[in-house]
Length: 111
Length: 119
Image (cartoon, rainbow over all chains, first blue to last red; front, side, top):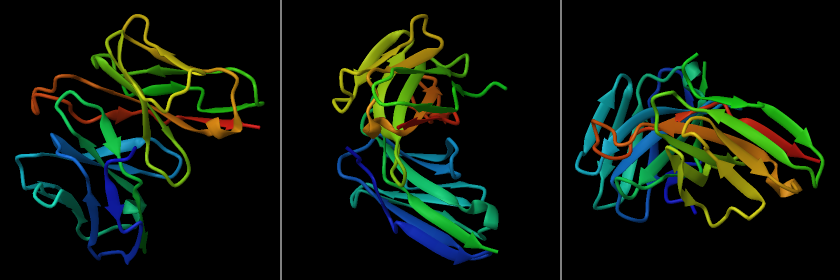
């Protein structure tokens, strides 16, 4: 079963614009992570936010977490064509539990 | 290359045949995960090991699937009597547990995957 659900399913933007992707989940979490996957490749970890954190930054990435709404958002600023990929949120319900992934968002950045 | 490596990258087989995939994790990582991913979907958890112990196995995994990590290093995933529905990308990932920063589970490092096509 998939705990996280991303929204929208697909997003197409112009290079230089910001991309915002949302993730909702069902049960309490220990941490939430975002991953990126280029077509036909493995996943690459982008950022991890713990349940007691509200916001985190890494380069052009900004992640927020609202545990009361059981939701997270990933913002990519000043997007580039190379950001074109699928993005997944993944949750860990306990410190020792497995990571459960959502279905993903397909981001297309037009040059 | 010190990342996670998977072999083979592509496998085409006929229905009913057995296939085996191998995963070599990052050497200092004690946890190893297997996921399955079909087109347009997110990775679906199959099983994971801590060292050589298999700690959890998905109920979705039928008894045709078996995974081992005999010496706590590399792992194999075997699928017996393959079916067309087994066609997917099989992803392996590793991590260090516990993680010094989070005190618990941390990020996963994925291999490039093994793509299985069952004819």
